[in-house]
Image 1 (cartoon, rainbow over the protein chains, first blue to last red):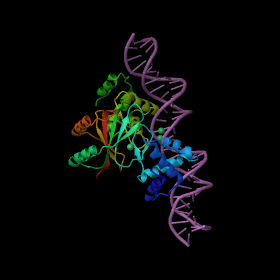
Image 2 (cartoon, chains in turn blue, yellow, orange, purple; image 1 turned 45 degrees about the vertical axis):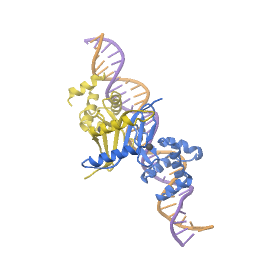
Image 3 (cartoon, each protein chain N blue to C red; image 1 turned 180 degrees about the vertical axis):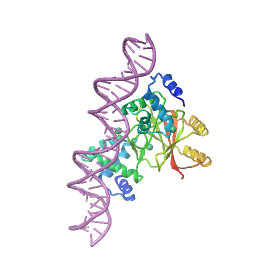
Image 4 (cartoon, each protein chain N blue to C red; image 1 turned 60 degrees about the horizontal axis):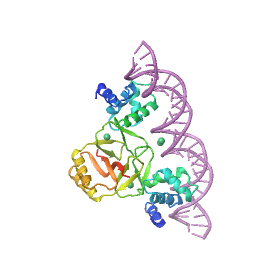
Amino acid sequence: MSSEDIKNKLTERGLKVTPQRMAILEAIYNLKNHPTAENIIDYIKKMHPNIATGTVYKVLGALVDNRLVKKVKTENDIMRYDGVMKSHHHLYCMESDVIKDYVDEELDELLQNYFEKKNLPGFKIEDIVLQVKGTFNK
Amino acid sequence: MSSEDIKNKLTERGLKVTPQRMAILEAIYNLKNHPTAENIIDYIKKMHPNIATGTVYKVLGALVDNRLVKKVKTENDIMRYDGVMKSHHHLYCMESDVIKDYVDEELDELLQNYFEKKNLPGFKIEDIVLQVKGTFNK
DNA sequence: TATCTAAATGAGAATTATTCTCTTTTAGGA
DNA sequence: TCCTAAAAGAGAATAATTCTCATTTAGATA
Ligand SMILES: [Mn+2]
Ligand SMILES: [Mn+2]
Ligand SMILES: [Zn+2]
Ligand SMILES: [Zn+2]
């Protein structure tokens, strides 16, 4: 993803283009694997040593609100972020803190068909994310 | 679930039976809907006003370690707990903080069959939990 | 291009969920 | 009943995140 692409993403959503926002989006795309705010801050500080922690959190909030980034649910109180916006699933490693993306359109279709028939009374489904818990074999 | 049942659960896992542990497990079973530590503390304080916050967190940790309780993943940094130990799924309401259990053995079988054929190379699956995001219609 | 201003950032304090430390109490086996 | 390792209580400490407010800046406008 080029600088120009990142800039366009911000503009499309009506967000002002600032060096901080550019750097944070770029960090998320480059770091991959669902970085924490701290991961992002460490990464950015190399090129952009004066960024304020509060700014990173505020920008992350704005990016989430504007659907440029997603929060990833975890089992502790450290939030993680995801730059992959198309609906996809996650493999959670129980032995490390690795969360790997899992894209499977065949599965998505299977699930969609399943829930079209069996519609849950009283609940309107927007999105389904599988948390696949296990271990990566070494 | 009777007091005696709760006591037995603790004993089976080799945990000492204390009033605090009894109260915390009972709170989780009675509150349902995936309470936070704070929900549990508020509930317990009615009958047990002197319980220490740190004790509640320590007990919750022990219950999780001993598989009497599960953590529930959420999108913010407040942990929630689940007394339903059999594998099941969750409906996340996007408009409130309600997380409802979703039990569906037909679906579980479907998923199990699916992943028996398509085994993910390099990953050993232990458990699959669907996060179904949507809204409860009013 | 220069000006203007609402919005964004920086710095650091505040908040808050959770963990830690240390003393006292207690469950449960001997 | 005694004994002791484990658990609980009190409160301080930690750490992720949020807040406040002074300063800067993006980008619309003239
Ligand atoms: Mn927090
Ligand atoms: Mn925290
Ligand atoms: Zn992802
Ligand atoms: Zn549940």
